[in-house]
Length: 353
Image 1 (cartoon, rainbow, N blue to C red):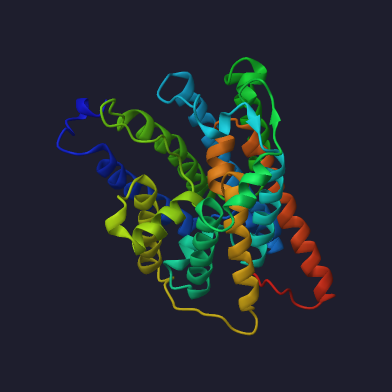
Image 2 (cartoon, helix red, strand yellow):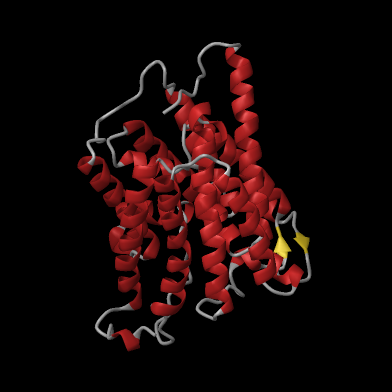
């Protein structure tokens, strides 16, 4: 497919950077305007909670539908993807999901939301994302890698790919059931048509990324890895490329992170949302640093963030991704409840946006 598009003059890896940049710009712009974040839908301001959750679930429904269609029609093959392995690392997924959920409450946003906010002048978000990237890299390849490997050994071998498609014998039936269930919640969420439209467009970026890296840019003589939208691994790749650019070549993930920052910056400037904000006594620095650390470690253990494991992983009907997302939700709710009890009726340590 790569040669058929007349891109022979491009190396597939270089083309993937540009593709990731374009996808990222769209994500950053849409996420900034819609304030797209799972945390807001779970523990955000009560008046906004239902509509925010509806917007996020709309993206998930479109991701499931689009990714299933791409797989069924042969545009993408997930058979060798880590989220469809026969082995399910339960301990790592659950522990990582709980950590990530706790972290996104402490940091007042998940990794994707904070990346978007960082480009709007939010210095709290910028610092937290840097901590997130360092912690994730340490867990992948650094001092915390042995602990990750040890936790990963506590796994269950299912004897078949850990997906709903394998359980049902096909992908269409479980995908249709999930989309129908999600749409019932979406319709009742009270989200505006504009919010739902932006959520749907964000969800459509998920299968577009899969098809782009797995089909459009596929070159059998110079293959690149199949990649969907995510923030954990791309954040570590961007960090490493930033500090050691001569030792590594950028790929889709680096382009995507750069695009998210550019798209969010563009939206914030166009709509007058850009302003520099830092820490103050109502935004404890320790909460953000702890949140970034927990999300970085947790995102790697769980196999992704709310986008990588949530929208992209659940979109491919991965059981591991569904377990990770459920653990993130549980971690967020438990942490929010603990903070509310700690404040004893006073203002929360994690203020509303």
